[in-house]
Amino acid sequence: MRSQRQDRIIFAGECGELFGAVERPQAWPSFLFQASLMGIELAGIPEWKLRVVTREANRGAFFIAQSVIKYGLVNSSVATGHPSWLFEFFVNESRAL
Image (tube, rainbow, N blue to C red; front, side):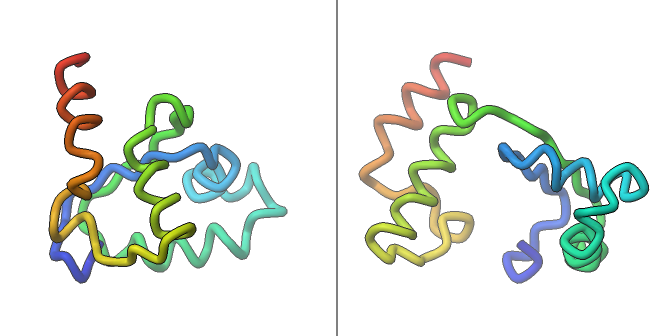
C-alpha cells in the first residue's frame, strides 16, 4: 500500500487473531512474531485501521485474492481498479449499501 502512496487505509479481513495481536500484543503472545512484522509495515502508513469482517462482507476482496492464487493475476487492483470481470459484482454491492 505504501508503494501506491496510500496513507489512510482500512485493512479488513477474517484474521481476528492477527489483528488482535497487532493492536494488543500482550494479549496474544503466540502471535508476537507475526504481529511485530505487521507492525513494522504499518509504521510506514500514517493512518490505518484493522477491521475484522466475515468473508461474506468482504467478498470482492476474496474474489480478487482467489484470482491471484488460481490464475496468477497479480496486477494491483489498488492501482488499476477492480478487475473488469467483477464490474457487475461491485456495481451490485454499491447499490446494496
